[in-house]
Image (cartoon, rainbow, N blue to C red; front, top):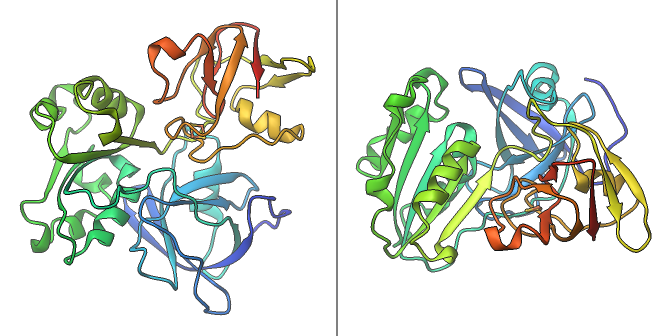
Length: 323
Ligand code: FES
């Protein structure tokens, strides 16, 4: 394994105890303390930052039961079109390697004392939701139902586990085989607001569909998490400048990099949590310039004056912000 300087966001060096194939192109990694002691606790929906063998820092949801204190389990989809983080982890990491890992953080927490949950998971977005389901266990009185969307049975992580008799009537798995005409119709699920809290994690298309169909639900009952990090690249992305109002400092934001990371690299400490445009922590005042909003947080009326700097970019040459 390549050894690189541990990133400042990684406080632990954990041993990869086990690597397993979870589905086609998807691998699970079990991480433990090298001395076998307990790991810092986490709550369902938490993620950890992992420094992968090529040095990139990536965020992965913990998918095991938070009651397990001896291990963290992350499940990673090898994305050949991505920035190289998942490919490095899936191809280069080996059992026995030591890997720098950050402390668990949660930008997608389960609401305490909720009566019911509707979980909507797309693809590898199942990972935080699996931890939630495992944490609810048999003792919880909360009712829940999971709708899990994937392309095919071969690409469905945890398929066998979720088809177990104990989940009968609670889990609906839908495969579209890449055909939009076979997409699951979410409207019957979302048509009538209820006591349930909705937790949705998956690709942008799923989250936008859920957001568009749940406008009549109380906003406090809809919870999103994206598994796409802020470094997601779109074909027409261009570099731009971010300018700090007041000091006039100007920094270049390259394609594949986020405003948040660029500010950090220049010593500006900006709070963040999910780093995927869903939690609202990095909300920043937009002073000038037109933003290309890519978050799931801002309301249309807020978009002219605010920007989520972990995911959003500029439509033009620059954005002036007040961090
Ligand atoms: S850090 Fe969560 S929205 Fe930016």
